Image 1 (cartoon, rainbow, N blue to C red):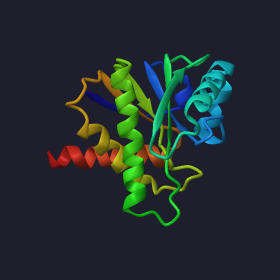
Image 2 (cartoon, rainbow, N blue to C red):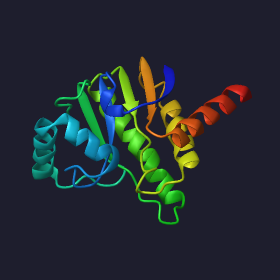
Image 3 (cartoon, one colour):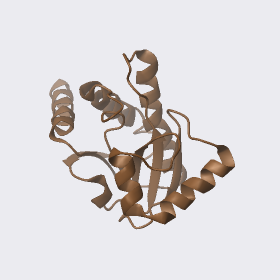
Image 4 (cartoon, rainbow, N blue to C red):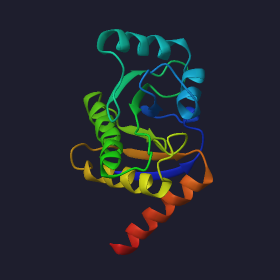
Length: 175
């Protein structure tokens, strides 16, 4: 499995699936969630509405999958990250669950290339370095469960990008 880190807008990435840092309503919001809904169009919104009518809102740490609408990917995996609010081990586990549940949906849908945003590090205020460490470790923990061709961490801002690069470099130096 190849891990890749890029600084870009996730809505422009052509992969099998992108992950959306959604809110529990699944109806779009600010940040990456709003951008995905705006660029993806009504197909995504309608698919999210169908999920809501079937199961209700998406809980923190859980994930659902929809079409990608007008985006260059095939699917969008929507996952709801935790709001930090003084954090704690429970919030760290919920964030790890976002990655684990997104990976489970990717496996189920035979996705080979997946792109993750920096879940919960925007308006939800999760510390960026801790979130990056959880993201990388959780993805690595699942590398034997499924053979992804590539996992891309798409960092919109430079601070997240630098956190991911630093963690990957430090990990490589330890091995």
